[in-house]
Length: 107
Image 1 (cartoon, rainbow, N blue to C red):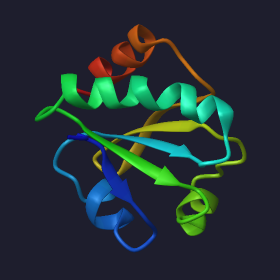
Image 2: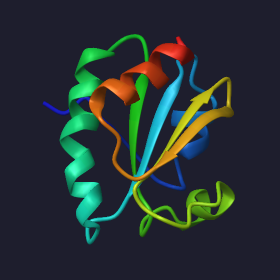
Image 3: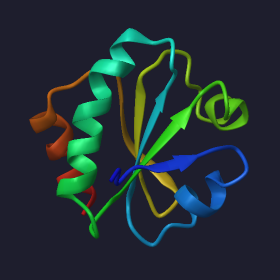
C-alpha cells in the first residue's frame, strides 16, 4: 500500500495548502529517469513519517497549473510546505537522510 497522496491541480489546495500537517510535494513525470530513482526514497519516507507529514506526488503533466505556480522548471523538484508556505525545496535526487533532515525541520 502506498502512503503517497496523488495530487492534481483539482485537489492541490485541499491536499497541500490546507493541510494541517506539513506536506512534502514531489513534482515528477513518468518520462523522467531521476524521478524514477527518487520515487522509492519518497515512498519510504512517506511510510516512515506517516501521521507526522503528508507526502504528495504530483505529475507535472497532470498538474501544469501547480507546477507553473511554484516555478517548477526541472523534475524532480521537491517542495517542503508548512502552513501553506514553501519552507524549503530541492531539485534533483537527494539521499534519504538529507531529505529526512529537511522533513525533520518542518515538524
